[in-house]
Image 1: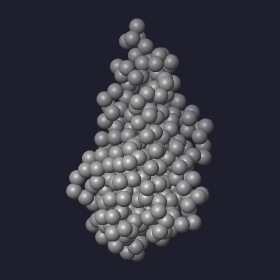
Image 2: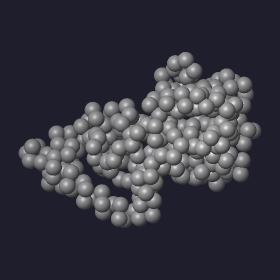
Image 3: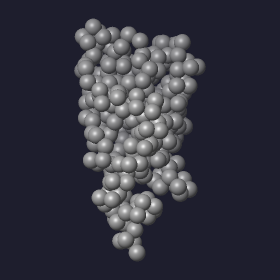
Image 4: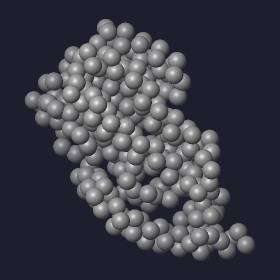
Length: 283
């Protein structure tokens, strides 16, 4: 990905930022880069550490207190809010929503909403910028990732609504990373439904630099992918959904025929519907 130009980077030193999910792979790397560029950063995460305030984004009270504390640490001014807090559970989308589905919506969508609402008065005062992290999976329906897909498409819709209602005073950018090997995938790996190797991988630094470039731009870009391939995928999935679904369906059939997710209890119904190896193993 093309890094921000030095001219653009001159806009960053002295700005004040809050980063959610700041103890995670994306968040910690972004905090480090922003601080290196002269940005004053306070993190928010369930796992507190030096410079990171402990805060569960699913808890209204913790969010109000955590954001207030962060803004106070920044001297009362907030210029940039970056959202990374998220979870990526595996679910069978044909089953009733379970605790994992509820968690995906509470963290990915409503957590983003809560923190933004708490920070909005400060962002309006500074004419600041919000960077929301969605995913290429928001428009790419991969197997057993339905809760994540639904939540991330909702996050993108939330950002669009923010832009419509607040865009005259606050910049809003949605970033669409592809598949990046981070701990968010640990839960899907534990169920045997990992997407490792099934979709093209990106690097953590690709997403970090996409966010930094959006933060440094003169005007907030609307939608940003992390790589050139991601940009092409975003265009394809958004403008040619029917073709995307046919491609995924074909790939899924081939993967299941090769034994993808074989032995994963959560994928038993998927194999049964496609006549894959798990159907025979289960009989």
